[in-house]
Amino acid sequence: MSSAALHTTPSIGRRALQACGWAAVHLSSIIALLVAWEVFARSGAVTMFMLPPFSAVAERIWADAVNGTLWINIGLTLYRTFVGFVLACIIGIGLGIAMARTALARWFFDPIISVGFPMPKVAFLPVIILWFGVFDLSKITMVTVEAVFPIVTATVLGLQGVSHELIWSARNMGAKDRELLWQVMLPAAFPQIMTGIQVALPIALIVAVFTEMAMGGFGVGGDMMHASRFADSRGVFAGIVEIAVVGYCVVKGLAILRRRLLLWHQEAVAPSTV
Amino acid sequence: MKAALIRYSPLAILAIAWQLIAQFELVSSTALPPLTQVATAWLDLLTSGELLTNAGLSLYRGGVGLLLSIVIGAPLGIAMAWWKPVDIALSPLVEAFYPMPKSALIPVTVIWLGFGDGSKILLVFLGCMLPVTIGAFNGARSSEQVLVWSARSMGASRLRMLWDVVLPSAMPDILNGIRTALALAFILMVTSELIVARGGLGNLIGYLGANGSYDAMYGAVLTVAFLGFAADRLYQMFMQRMLAWRQVGDA
Image (cartoon, rainbow over the protein chains, first blue to last red):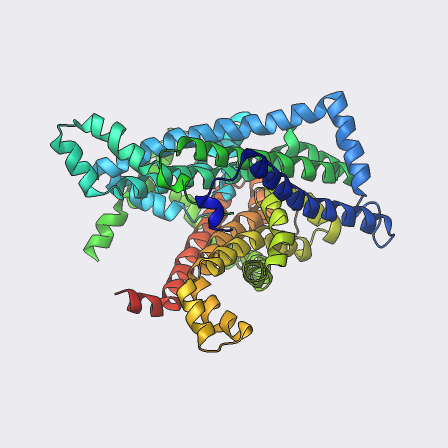
């Protein structure tokens, strides 16, 4: 990370070249890993069952893509993840605002959140199944329950951390409660809320895949479990590659969205970490 | 004491609400057995020894996996921050695998190591390693340049500096990474045991649920939840002690 690059603005051509160079370096590690996988799998040190070569797995993914099951499975997993995730965002931010503003809500929910946050809530899966059955409703509920906690805590901490000068000066200029919340407090707390949301998204994906494995009903997780029952290890590894790619795209997408939404904020100037 | 009572009274209110709802059968008693019934079923599980053996098994798997992930993950992160070639080679892999939902690895670990302890330990290890690595990487990278320079000017060797300057200043980030990993370890342990396992708390929950003994199932679920909560609180206490030297300096 050269600090000179931040201050001088290199020509567009050079910047593009640099970006290409970095992409090549990044890709070369991934390609090296895939080649190592292929060579190791074909070396005879492990059986086809334990580690099918990457080419065979890629062939399988291609076949699934052509006959359409790949898109159905990925679509179902993403649908469950995102419905649960969006619900968690709405509930989490709403609850966070309520807790930051009213003492009663804070008194009631604070111990529940602080006790509930570190709990492995996936253990409640059988209870959720008991209540809501084994279809999408229970999967989405489970996703929401796990994803909501980081968002609530981030919202409360973010709102509480808004500097008093900002609030006082807004009040001084005659801002009403509602205006204060929407135009001052929420924007000021937004970076932290966004961090909570970024923590929640991978959790939502983990839980979505897990519920599909536990209850079936297609999706990438359901498909992997199905393949594993029939000792079809090619299908299992295909699922892993698929979900790794999907996870990467989704998490990267959210990071890009953050940079877009926070262009006005100081952090956009600083070099990104990881 | 009184403050704590007021603070945690909402939990008591929830428990009472649970008991009343179940008592007056506002919902069916299979969906929500009364809390008292859950308590007696839990005591039965405890006295029969079932709860203890399964909890021991789960904690063993989670603990070994987590320990391995710390022992391997933390040095890896520091090495990435300290030697550029390691960073260039590994950071794309870390970046690619970090967002991957780790529960997807459950069937693979079973293919590799079977239904027993090995596959659970491997899963927890794989799932917990990256948060620790990233914590160590961020911590070691952001260690204060002034400290590094002054250590170097006083003639510290590179390795010596790693141990005396970089490691202590990376400690808070490493410990935070481990805290994330601890929560993940519980999630992965329970999910993998629920899906495929011999023994363990997750397995016990699944078994009790399948048998329709829902009161005992609630007991086991609450036990897992409590263990996760207690582990986090204990770890926080440990963390504060480890970082006590920092607080003194800050104040």
